Structures are given as C-alpha cells and as structure tokens.
Image (cartoon, rainbow, N blue to C red; front, side, top):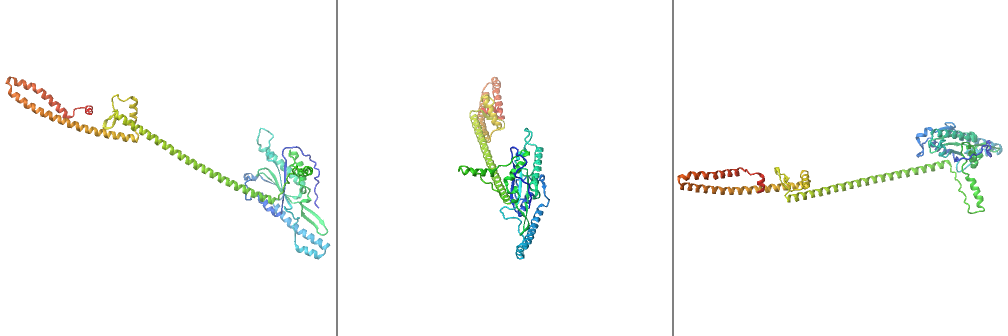
Length: 465
C-alpha cells in the first residue's frame, strides 16, 4: 500500500496576490510517451510557437536521462510480476486449474481501463507578466530579475513535486523557449495493494493519490505552497459550480458555469498540432494573399506610373505643338509685316531698321536661333521662297538693264552719226570747239555704261528694285 502525506490542511496560508499559480494535469497512456518525447526534443511537425534560439536554455530538473526507457521497462516488468503474483494466489485459493487458465491469458496492463490513461503529464507555470515584473517601476524589463524569478519558481515547483509525489515523479524539466516559462513533466502514480487471490499487485492508479484524485485539492495545495512568491490559487471553478447548482434549486435564473473538460495529454497534443497546422496554413494563405495584394498594388502602381508618364509625354508634346504653332504664326506674321528679310547666304534675318518692336525682335531672335521643327521647316521654305524671288528679280533687272543699255547704245550710235554730220557742216573755226564740248557727255556716258556692266550697284539698291 502506498503511503502519502495528508493534504487536508496545509501549513502554509495563502497570501493575496495578483497572479495565480497555474497547475495543469493531463491524462496519458504509456504508449503516448513517444509523442511527449518528440515534443521535448522539438521534433514535432509544427513548432512555430517555439523559439529555437532559446531551446538551449531548457534544463533537465529530475529523473534519469533514460527515464522513458526505464519507465517502459518497469511497466513491462510489473506486468509479468503481477501475473506471477496472481497465478500464485489462485494456486493457493482456487487451485491449479484456475491458476493455469490465468497463466494462459497472459500479462495484463497494470492499470484500470480509462479514457485518458493512468499517467499524468503536468505543467506548472504563472502568468507571463509575473515573470517579467520589475522591482523598479521605471524599468519595463530586467532580464536579471526575470531570471531570478524563474529560478525561484523552478526551485519551489521542484520542491512541491518531490514533497507531494516522491518516487512517482519520473521526469521534470524547465522550458524557456516557449511563450511562458514553465515546468513540464510526468508522474507515474504507482500504488501497491495485496489480496489472497491476487497477491501483491503494483498498479498505476491515480485515484490512490489524494492530489491526483481531487483536482481542487491539488489547486488549493499548490496555491498555498506558492503564496510566498506572491502567487495565489487559481479560479475555484468546481466550488463555483457547486454553489451555482445549489442556488439554482431555489432560483432557476442562476447560471451554472460550464464544467472544465480535462483532455488527455495525447489528445490535447494532437489537437494542438492540428490547431497549429491549421494556423500555419491560415498564415501561409494570408501571406500568399498579402503577397498577391502587394503584387497587384505594384502592378497597379506600374500601370499608373505608365499612364502618368504617357499623360506627361502627351502634355509635353501638346506644349511643343502649341509652341511650334505659335512660332509658325509668329514667323508668318512678321514675314507678312516685312520684319524678316533674306540675310547672309540666303538665311532669314531681322530687318536692321527699327520697324519691329524690341519685344518682337527678341522673340524673333529666339525663334530664329532655336526654332521648333515646324518653325524651322517654315523658315527654310521662306528662305527658299525669298531666294527664288531674288533670282527672279535679278533676272528681270538684268533683262531691263540690258534693254536700256541697248537703247542707250543705239542712241549713242545715232548721236555719233549726228555729231559727225554737224562737225562736217561747221566751219573750221567752230569745229574744234564743238568737238571739245561734245566729248565730255560722251565720256560720262561711257563710264556709266561700264559701271552698269560691272554691277557696281549695291545689294540694298538691288533689293529695292
């Protein structure tokens, strides 16, 4: 028979505090320990809640390194020992036939049938804010104070586990790589009983331990035990349910709090894995959707930038066309007013007189220096047109000069003939004088005709013609 200390009245008074100490028991079968081991080794499929950079801070607190293999071996050994004891008991009480039948049946699991299993996985922790509280209100976080609190919590939790469960505590460790610091472990509640029929039987029997049998009593006990750290007992849900049920007998309006459903460790862990996998898929889908939205936003931005650039280019082209049209109109208008004329090498130039206003001259100078393509085309057309006009005028002027020179030459020939007749008719005394007087106009006429032939007239006068 197992012997346990009495927990009916704890010697530690519960102190008021803000945060409760959290104790969780979960049922499990021995064959579920493999999944528990994978969790300890951080080899499960979905470990997004684990900070692997802090896994090295996790610490083994109690139990042999091969505790899992040892526990499995012990279960198998107890199966055989219990069978041997039961066969010997039947041999003494019922005879060899009954003993032989039981021996043929073979070993049985050393626990009673249940939904969750005979082992207890436990977690002891507190609110994350309690571990991160600082004595100096000016500090938001102090890693040294947090480490000291964790060490105090760890020592007190291990003391409570050893004093309450003794050799039943087969494994305990401190985890620092998850959201909140906690103590995690396994309790194997071995219990011995004796009967004449079965002999000495060792069973995994949680109900034989007062704190595993009565969850509320365990909460009371650990709450009082951790009072020295300023932590309190957790919510008295079972007591609240009992009081609500009693009150409901007289007042049907009273609502009874829902009973907390304790899920076996292996089922909880499997559900947790499914939940984490679902959250991972959801996060992946959200990331994919967010990426798609970002890609669509980037595409829309590129499209908007393209359209903006097209609009800017169209606006610039429209401005250039407007400017070119203005330049064409300005050139045409000033050419019609006579403010533009052919210059050197046939280039279009501004008249040298003051017919054009200063603002007009400045605008014309800018256009003639750096014209737009359309204006340049008009300027070249005007230059060619002015050139053609000039050539036509030159040819006409040359033809007219040639006609007049021919007329002069004919007149000169007639005058020479008339002069010779006059000279022949005059007396000798007047003949020399007459010749001298009529030679001067003839010389002047010769000089004028030579000047015309050489093109002695200036370009300005020629343009005027």
